[in-house]
Image (tube, rainbow, N blue to C red; front, side):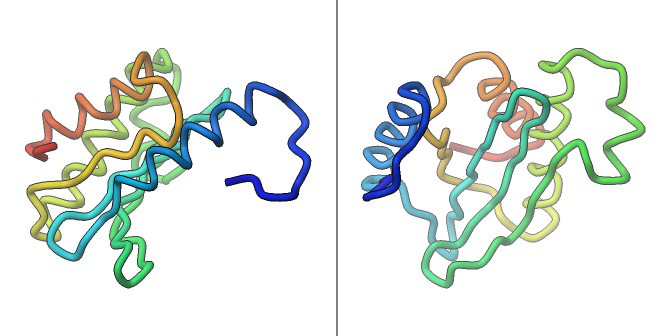
Length: 126
């Protein structure tokens, strides 16, 4: 995945290697988009992607105006669950009920798991 670019930390190198292995198998279609999660030290982001056209169908993060006020001051896990619920609501409104979950090389634990649980609470299946 990294190619010829030197990546500074071994931890990031390992995550990108895991990401490459996951992405070989996980692809989003027009009927079932890929729900991709990115986790930084401060925030989490979620995107629903149609890989056949390369379009982002919906996205959610706590930096959005609607979510920023409701999740400020809460623990990171609660904020992640709210983001999962928000992306789930957006996808349900767009007519999607099933997605493929892409953890993006992150361990399915903590905030990544909370996003998945929030999306399931909103009615998405994966």
